[in-house]
Length: 622
Image 1: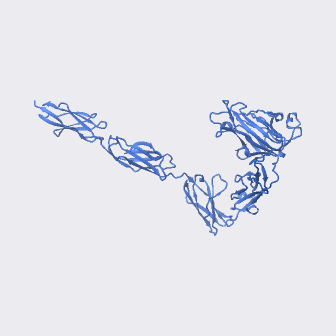
Image 2: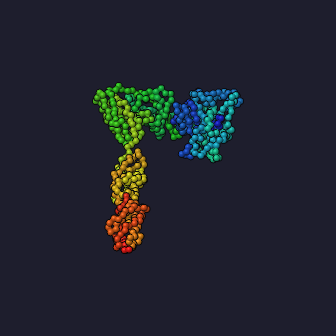
Image 3: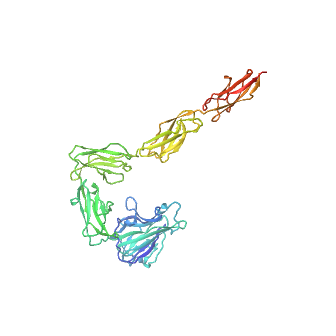
């Protein structure tokens, strides 16, 4: 087989490419997804941030919603009769073959009955990482394409006069060509295949960035089949159902088993299902083995199922005849109702489910089923075989539907309840316990303070978050807990004298995981600070009738305030207010002799009362 390397090109205004190969038909076989008609971005170029490389995908626009598929899972199937076209007797089209020769054409303008493949870089810019841009040059993106197949493949466009243009690659000379693809391009061309058979394209993307760098991508393989698929002869495949004639009653499990008619070591299967009224088979994701199990549903009534056995190169080596399923229902024998024990649940709780028959029958074979949002079929709740059941509540059950079914001895449904729709909220936050322990239950104003040791715990471990601490209503700030759920907070040295309650309040880091809590108050008693009263006589000796003067200074924590009383020989002779902790008091006229002078400080809100030492004053006669 001759293998040619071609570089496929595109521009913002549209281009054509020629992909050609010669030799016998390739052995490639249909892949999981077969596209027979509709719009297809065959070469969709994006950037994969996780891999750090360009990536190719197939933009499948043939269904209700666009799907981007791995190229290795897709076959483009071209119908022989719809695509057959005679080569025109025009010199400009001689590259297609002799006039009148048959080629298989996918036109530039969409034919709704045929595939309409093109290529696109429209998603590329939006997929690039921040700070990276593809060049605005016409050759910013390039696709290197290697083609294997039984004939020549051309992709081109025609101008307004019907002549081919943008025929950038002509494989007859086997020379490599380069066709540029600009960014944000979306291109369609005419595709022409000169022979029936299987074609394989190996495509590798590259791009130039705005700074001159290069982005590369891994090669992707594409499969195009022109005409009917070729199945290797010599191996047959039978499909048997677990019920006679594949006839089922609603509730009975459907199991299909594929069996080759000769011994083989091959064991790679795919199953294809065409629903009643549908025109296309769809690959099932429920099995890759010889056995296919389908969930209970009347949707299978009239469905056709085909099994295919694949070889080591993923080619089809055997294909079964379609088997048609029939699913019927029994008339209900009772009305079955289901109830949940709560209207709403939190994650981590368990739902208690009960059911009742009306009228009551002798049948007692039950199963419970759940269908989560987005799921098509109900799934059996493991272990449920009675009229009542339990279901652990998880986050994915929000909006889920639960039903109970009553079965006969042949596992056909006799009655089915209306669904219970579950309402699920976040799990309840774990309860926490906050405690405060004081290192000292009493302290003196201004002296070294004690500490409040805080601990927060749950039933299963330590609290995580912060605690705010207050003493006597005074905010002592917010403090982070350590890994053991503990914090140690110093009480203020100048906490006001008196009795105070120390309280800690826990603020969780995640309120959905742990609940807030407050401690019981711890009591601390603060005594007043000790004051020091100093007395000095301005003159220790005066001559009558002169009066002496007492110089008083009171020291403590900060500047004491309040009043002092002056005593002479034990009797109060005057009172004066402190100013900046000092005061000078003029003594009364005293009789001649010696006198004891003393000062008493009455105390203030922070200081206890105190007295000075006795000073001697001598009063001499005149």
